[in-house]
Length: 194
Image 1 (cartoon, helix red, strand yellow):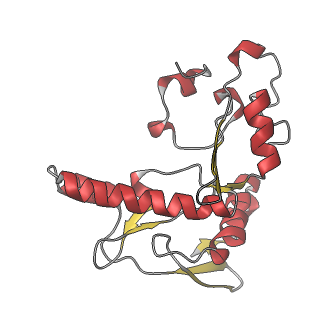
Image 2 (tube, rainbow, N blue to C red; image 1 turned 180 degrees about the vertical axis):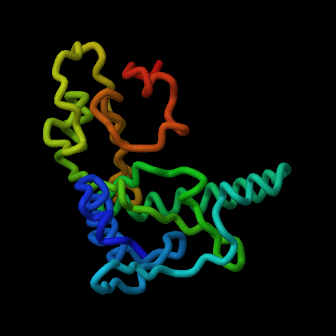
Image 3 (cartoon, rainbow, N blue to C red; image 1 turned 135 degrees about the vertical axis):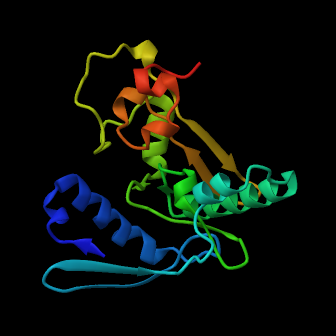
């Protein structure tokens, strides 16, 4: 349930619009499923698959010791979901414990596509070659950064499976997406990694 008064905030509205544009298209066992959207005079309602076991953050708070096999299993399910969304040229941009939900049988369900973005192969190539994407709507307008501070993206083409995977890593100064608690010190300081 989302109060329509919150939708007056342009940034919040954009996140909800992204979620509603992307999530209904995704049908994967490791992505929370969109069920419906409706509204009344005061609220907008987004109905999603119920994940009864909560999120990874809560699980970690309650369980200090987790087996390596369970960690491997969950990581493989997260990777499966990210590979799937990459086929649609979508980058999630906010993977964190709070956005990893669990089904009844503790299978991973990734949620919260409000920060997600479409990246075309051409945009990925531009980032890979130039170190930034001039069309990124989340870019900082500050243009005083040196070219040696550009962080090149990473592009991998897996020709055996015919899938295009791109991890678009632009200069931290140009990206205002993500949760501060999960950013590296370099990102927070606006410096390139390593």
